[in-house]
Image (cartoon, rainbow, N blue to C red; front, top):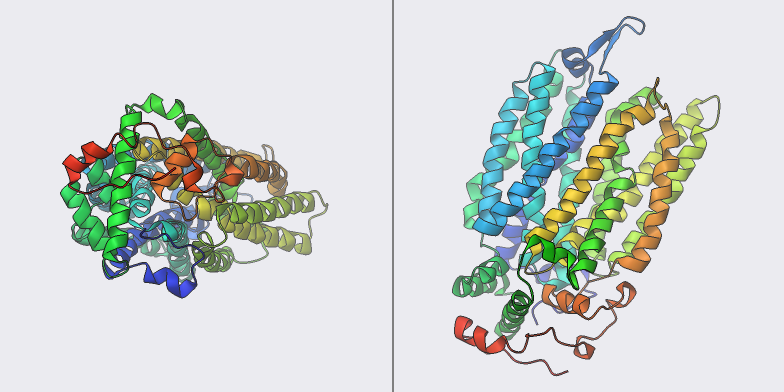
Length: 521
């Protein structure tokens, strides 16, 4: 069927994309730039002297302005509450009105939040602006990976959805490069110019989103079969034969209707039957996504490196992001070639070693220039491991492990789990890092390193490798209770069909006008 090719060469990967699919994926891939602008932009801009002067307090001993610990905790943690509600709102809009409508609505909202941020001159307004912007980021996370996973062929789903993290990192690199150039300017121009980037992406998306095709799977779920078939054909024609497109269409319709017959679609159904396992799996994935310390390097990394005094914080951010972009492009390709689990094992091991080493270096007294430089090096190695593993693979797993019929409910649950952890970790970190509180400094590596180590075992026992599988095949693998370490090896004709799968064929004939062939057991 369409996309039923795995272990593709890099050149062959792009042959599975026709022009319509390329344009759609590129536009959807641009949207996460704004998440990178916010995530990395605020991290670096918080270390700017002009930003500290405008929103901070005067320290008479050090004779400089600084951002107090209590405000940093609130400023970086509270917006995740809006992130939480943004995901709820975005997933509801996406489910009810379609993926395109959600993308359009969130981009309009982003233009409003950017206006609040750029005009801020006091803490309250700046906090309000970031809260509004995080509502947009939550909506974006609820729809972009789902949209990407639903329109791309199975053989390149990891490549396509993996682009989400790579786009986020590229956005972070852009804002840090601009911030590096503006950090020496006089006055508020230091931080106002980077914040101006917040207008660019939503303007482009708002102007072009209605030229993209709606998700065929969403259309099938809403009984718009004729339009769904037309959209699938437009996303495959030229890259696949008519027979391959027809086969993918038949399997898509049959799988979705079979699962609809199995489930009522209520939120509680996520924790019933064979869906319980897949729901708990994506919850665990998001616990390790946020519980292994990424907020330490992404949100507070620039401030921490500035305090160490070994390298300019902007140069550190730019170097780290350049490494992560290179890794991001590699993992986009490798997800569909060597699989998700291999990347998680590799990245988790790197994270564990780097974090434990960083914690060990933090116990050395006194802290010398060499030891501080070693801490920075471990932070960079940790960032590379995170980009290889959880960062690169999590959104792909969130999108493909969700139940086809309840994808919006499932993805919402996964994202909300991540947000709860983000709020907790982001709020706690300033108190863990700084005096007069825990003052752990780099010794926080012991905490996150232990979580990373547990994540390696969780990957082996709980996280399946779904490369080369269609979303409907993944439903059947869970239905048949296939162990996580056997997902990629088991043959589909050895599995029991989902109940009512065959019985749904007659209904689909009348609804879609296609002939659906039964699979031989």
